[in-house]
Amino acid sequence: MERRDLLRALGAAAAFSLLPREAEAAWARVRAGRRPAGGLTEQQLALIGAIADIIIPRTESPSATDVRVPEFIDVIVSEQYSDAERDAFVAGLAGLSASEAAIDALEKAADRRAEPQ
Image 1 (cartoon, one colour):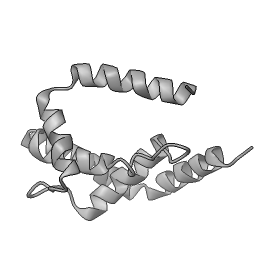
Image 2 (cartoon, rainbow, N blue to C red; image 1 turned 30 degrees about the vertical axis):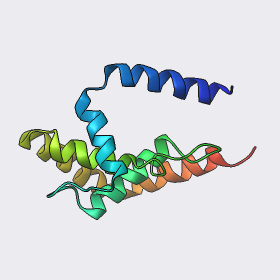
Image 3 (cartoon, one colour; image 1 turned 45 degrees about the horizontal axis):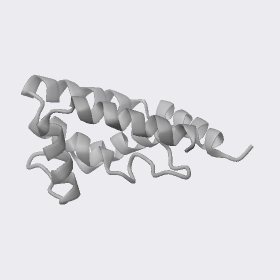
């Protein structure tokens, strides 16, 4: 087993032991393709996907967007956050959206890390 696989397995085991039932239900809704009513916009989901793929890029294993992390975040933010938490999250996304140059730089750095040495 490679180190990344071991870390993923350990992280998943720890996360699932701590995850509330609501998170399990959220993943079930994502797998079923059910988007929350009044959820995040396509532009917000694309930004979340770009950030998530910087953190977990596609290598020999799937990327964050491959495993539908943006859709999971949509369910959690839309159904589990209070109005104040949701507003703060969306405001944070708007701030990041305004600084897309920073995101472009991060994506380029991530691309360089993913290139074979």
